Length: 138
Image 1 (cartoon, rainbow, N blue to C red):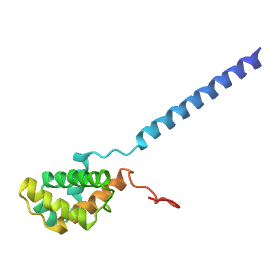
Image 2 (tube, helix red, strand yellow):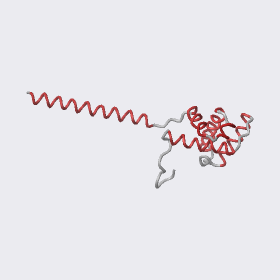
Image 3 (cartoon, rainbow, N blue to C red):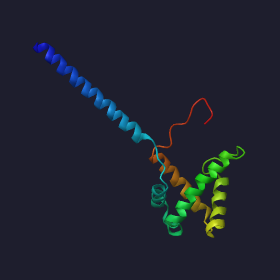
Image 4 (cartoon, rainbow, N blue to C red):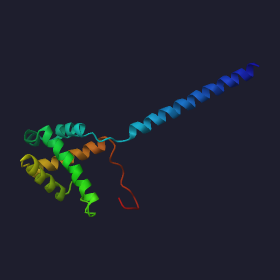
């Protein structure tokens, strides 16, 4: 009778360990999903701009540039298949033109390029950028 009780106790401990491992893994999967938060991205980018760019751009400028960049890529992807490369000159020009049209602001192209570069760092930091896809279209 003692051996059966010890066996049952060990089996119960094993089930608790397995349940804990499954729960821990489920928590890790949920946490691993990257989430792009615009305000967080704007703060991240602003903290990484050069002194000159940071003196010319405020958090609203950075936030707008990030949002407009997302919208520009979505517009191109949904349109006629003309998807611009992330951070390309076409997108940079579109962001500069939109800043003039919507906010009456003329941004230095180098400042906008710094915002795009720092946003790339943000995407990597949140885990939204992975290894290149091999053997297929990216």
